[in-house]
Image (tube, rainbow, N blue to C red; front, side, top):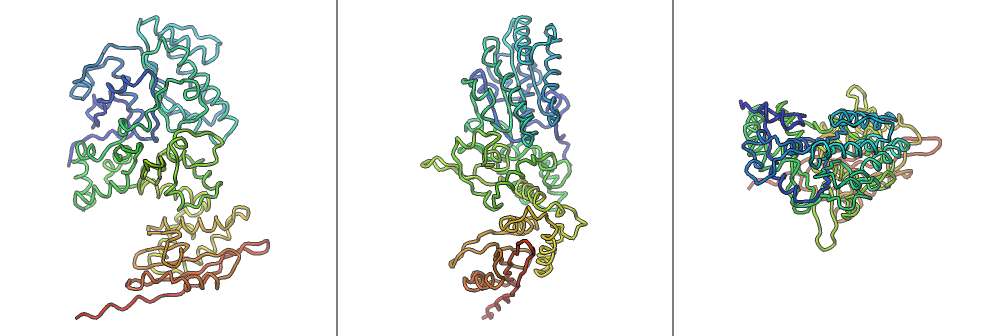
Length: 527
């Protein structure tokens, strides 16, 4: 059993170093960051190490070289002269209160006013910030460092509250406007966030802001490559393998499938989510920890409102311009899904300069689909409900398609009338099947066309064809005429053809269906 100490949820560099927790050394980036300009912005998903990066920079600018002993920065030609540091952390506050942002900023400013001898006045938050910057410079004789963590949380938390959103956006625009007007007093400013909101001042007014979010040289400034995982956490992987009773390579493969796959730049490294990996090592179990730490529900609601068919989320194509800036009224949710970490770069085409996106890993895909299903059908999350997706899962795994369809038909009758449409029916069916530990392929191509849904669960294969306000006969005829089961002619598993017709009118709502079984082919006789 290893003696590694895992810094789960810890964001303070000094605490991690002084108390002997594992620290993945990213300090080599300090020198390169200092050469990138006066004002720098980095976008990365939540729980990805941004706060720890800022804490590391704070320790460097405070001149605490003792903390860096044995790390890359200690071997570099760096100026360790202390600078006054203003550190604003927007992580902890609940911004759903109308005055939440103002109260948080007031607390920050009051602390620095006290430290640098400013008199608290009735001036605006923006003017008070200016006063502090100038006072810190005059009191110390040194240019100051400004570190701003999760600047966009006051926007992301209340994206469903347009009035508070607009108010917070105005406050932030005024607050950040000081960076440009007071630049003669500023040595270095580093701003992090999840999303790059296009109308906030740091992007519209600060024209010398260097956004390194999609620069290849900084692809792994946050997050861990597999090389780093093996270098720093091999004993942790060995402990986890022992607990799971599988070998080292199988454990690494499981970690890779659940937590790896984030790619933020076209030529960068694929990365693991640090938070989830540390939780897996601590709990000795591979589970979807990232979603337990809080999911922005506005994203799944936006997907629902737009009527995006869930399987179409994978494979979205975007330009770089679309990916790097978002706004409150943007109809397309895909760029925000990229910036918040729910989608990542799958591939980049140099000729067209287009990005293809996908879910980074199983943790994100399953977690997002589960959240999305709750928007469509809330009761499916209750394990004691007859419509929980665990019951649907059992029906499929045990080869009971009739029970599955009856359960689906009954569940649909419990949903609000105004929420239903053909796209809703299809989305719910897909989400239920994909969350049932199956392989679910929507609109699967064959030599005669595309089936609506093919599901592989345990020892069974299910092929669905859906119609809306038509007939079951039309659905079954299409299944047979286009020979969707033909590709499985040599498969030993039973194949179930399921023709379904969703009925929706003023007087009736329901699901009628027919099931046909294709017997598995007989194995070839042994010679």
